[in-house]
Structure formats: C-alpha cells, structure tokens
Length: 164
Image (cartoon, rainbow, N blue to C red):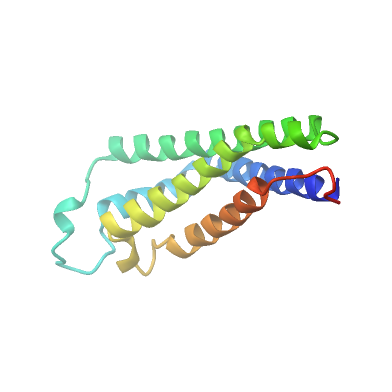
C-alpha cells in the first residue's frame, strides 16, 4: 500500500508543479513570453551563425507558441491530477490500480514530450537556444524530463498485492 501511495503522491507532485508553472505563466505572462520571443527570434545566439534563417520575427507567432505551451502545461497538470485521483480510488485493489495508471501515464508522457521535444529539441537544437547565455532553458527542461521520467518509470512498475 505504501508503494502505491508514494506513486500517487509523486504523480500529484508533478500535477502541482505543472499547475504552478501555468499559474506563473498566466499571472506573469510577460516574463516567460520574453523567453519564448528571444528563443524564436534567435537574437541572442552566436552572431552571424548559419542557422539564423530559422529565426521567426512575428509577435503573433510568439503569442501562439507561448499560449500553446501554457495549454499543454495545463493539460499535463489536469491529467496528472485526475490520474492520481483514479489511482487513489483503486489503492486497495492492485489489479485495478495497475489498470488505472493510464491517465497518469499519459499526463507524465505529455510532460516529457513538452519539455524534451518542445524545449530541448525544438528550442535547444532547432532555434539554437544552447548558444544563448541569457535565454537558455535546456538545463531546467532536462531536470524536468529526468524527474518526470523517473516518476513515469516508477509508476509503470507493476504493483502486486504483496507490495508494501
């Protein structure tokens, strides 16, 4: 039972984290909007690099990209919150608990996709965010991918009636 409870708490911890990120992005829209703007604009990458043709100079696109990120973060939070609730409901039935992991697994996977594909891959490599000393979120994104990945691995381990 303690193993199952720890899984629920960790899934809810990710939900809480993603909720705080959404809250901060909405209540202080301008701060992280600047991050998105500078990454897409590529104005703090190495001067005259050969990848500058990828730069986007459109405030409309910056807002769309940022709103998309916030919406995905909110979906991650909602799925992990709901997933944890479903797991709690079936905490006393290991077979059902294993079946009820799906929503949490989807939420955690979406979180990895957002921060790995969105920030590390697209932001970091396509828009060369790694070249910026100011607007480089790769380390933060990597930490999130690792934490969420560990929770996902732990969650998907099969729970048995004998698990403590």
